Length: 163
Image 1 (cartoon, rainbow, N blue to C red):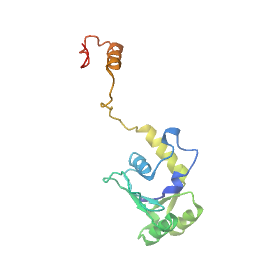
Image 2 (cartoon, helix red, strand yellow):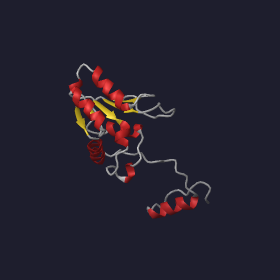
Image 3 (cartoon, rainbow, N blue to C red):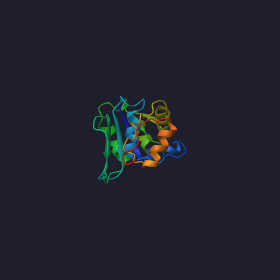
Image 4 (cartoon, rainbow, N blue to C red):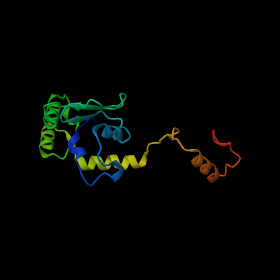
């Protein structure tokens, strides 16, 4: 079932996201969806306004960011449902009552923004991102020696520049 997400409505929900996820951008939301139960579904993140000049986003994703320009996201979602040959197969994510009414008129299902975020948070907790270690950290020689001693690597080579 394709999802139509009222993006700013979702991003402005309070009290759901843990502190480490607070203040997301649309691209963050897209990344979370790619790691969630919705990752195999087509998802349209409908965003009010103009596309930002800098936007990092995976091109291999089923998630699409749609910037509405001068049109409101609410109106774009309603138009997308009206032009769909199968509007009943869509799920609209929004807590905006006008968006929900438009979805119901077309026979689409509704998920509230808070429920959708709760799903994403739950899924993110189950599938954390494996982060590669940063090997480009610059340590002074004294710090390197301290770590060598901490890990019992006293026979290790001394850092360059030390005698």
